[in-house]
Image (cartoon, rainbow, N blue to C red; front, side, top):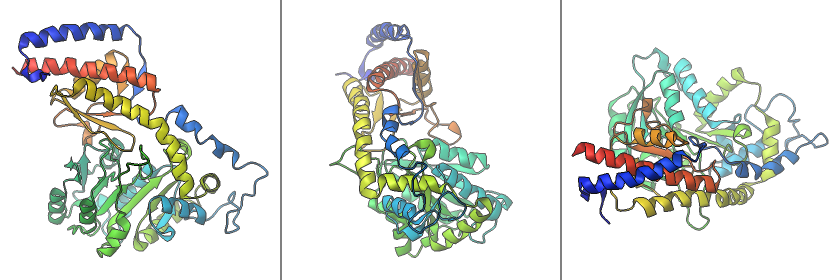
Length: 428
């Protein structure tokens, strides 16, 4: 099979004519498919409906400590909820604080508090001339929105197959004390599905930043989101590694059950050092009298323990796996050898990352939209929405049905081919 670059102009033009006929047929289907965000499907949400029956008006609503979960108090979260989420992200229960339903909300709070009150006695970031964050790219757009919202300058760090470019990270943080943090999705990263290597985690734990208030924002959102029971990525636990390295305060580790139970009614948590947790509690006592303990109790009584979560996530995998495979199998069947795109087959997480020819991503997304398929905006996986190569596209396969996804992927591949032909001809 010839790559598109090997084809003559006449061959490309003839192929384009055939593809345009197929594209017009798609436009006539009246499609209205949305693949723009990684929302769980109705099928996935239905898996947790039993949780709605765990608590009712006749249920004993006291936690194991004998505290009435309907009332105020228990700022850290009930102990059994701490133990459940701590087991999920492999930290001791005393290293964790339970929050509300969203880990993104916790991350926002941590940046906000650093801006207004500083970190462990350091100068509040809002009083500094310059504050910067490192952003592995492609990455999670909502992370970038938080730092952009606070006017924090974002610096791109390329993602490698082993995780972020640690040579660059070590150099930057050691030389510039205005760099205060880095965003990380270390397991089944958003959007590439990469899990950080052992060496990468060890190097994070041993970082020597010029800023004593530098923090690693370690968003372990997909810690149990495997697609395959017998082929799973393993991530070294960072909080423990930082302690071993004599660097305990450098990391904030976040998690939630948002894509395990219900996205709008999950339980979020942060794990950190004793000093960090003490400071977080001080902020919390002003901010709240306690989070939703009934929801914490509901989750504990439904899942019971880590084994319960593991079994539940096998059901999620059964729903997600055919969708991921449908997308990647289509890529491999339709695009392999054509030289117009690259992708990774992830073992878990929620997204598939596609890299087109440079300068094509926006046009591909627009062409798909014109035929009825809405995708994540091109550039969303980069700070400020600016992909310097205009090539990365995040694909979210969770929400559509398998049949809808097959149709959407067929259209996407068609758009990739058409836009790529135009780009190649334009560059000749």
